Image (cartoon, rainbow, N blue to C red; front, side, top):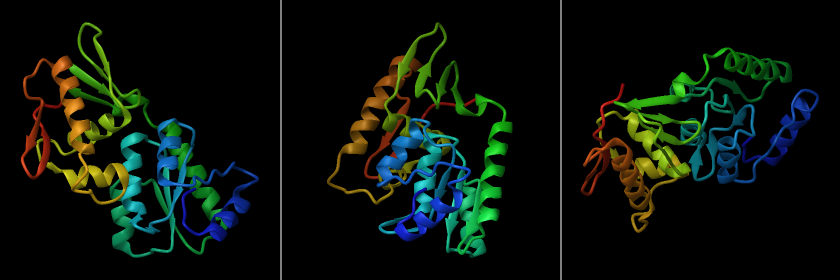
Length: 224
């Protein structure tokens, strides 16, 4: 569970303790690490968080995993609910909540996850090359494999989702870190450079990923 109100997190932990072991990460980075490592069965997430909101955090988590995400928040507007569900959240419970309802919603998203077809949805194809999202691995015909770092895999996921559209540095940085890009930082450029080299190695393309000066990046690989 990730929420900025300690009293509320203790309340939820108490409500669920007979059915689930509730983990409370001390930072967004720790939450991402737990999700990436597959150590969480589901994520309860608030939307109104300092310096950011749960919408962008959930979007970043969705690039790491298909872990069920349930928003548990005081926001109740229809627009906010639709926005949360559209970026990949599985359900939405508003505060104040009834413990029995929250428990039922969590069990429901876990059941739906168990019923999903296995992992084909986590394979992205670029011609003869496939990207295994869960294993963060590029694979080509002939069993050649190239591993990606967590950040490289997230960038490739974001660019693949955008198709051939340009993704700005700020969008990449925000979806990875949950905050706006520091224009003095070269972090995104470094990760993209390493990712481009790996794509060249395994795809055999001279220009699999373009840099649009002053704007951002886009993939030049046909998906499917």
